[in-house]
Image (cartoon, rainbow, N blue to C red; front, top):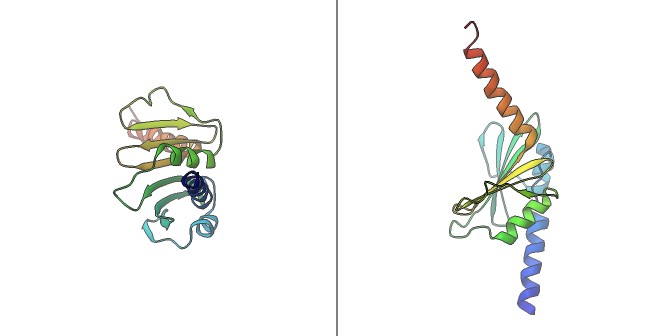
Length: 149
């Protein structure tokens, strides 16, 4: 019973301390995760909190993509931890039909998509609006290449 209580407490602490926050500002992310450990690219911040590397990508001042990976390369997120982080990002998650691949799982809800690579341990959330923006950017670049034909 004591072990079960400790396990549940650990999951609760994980959920409270590392909730993904698609749509938060840079200042809100810094307040939530602390000072960035790195700035690998101009719009990207890397945080370390509770043994987890958190990478936030910003567009127009808002976080549109967050990825999580445990700092200890020998450990991976388990199914329960992935579920806790998904629930922190909303409800009504639907497992996509193509999620039956060996190590990859995909979910979506009304605001974002989630991808979990069970092999590498990477858990990533991306706002649907960001996916649309990227697709529009690719379409516009392709259209521009074919102007005048």
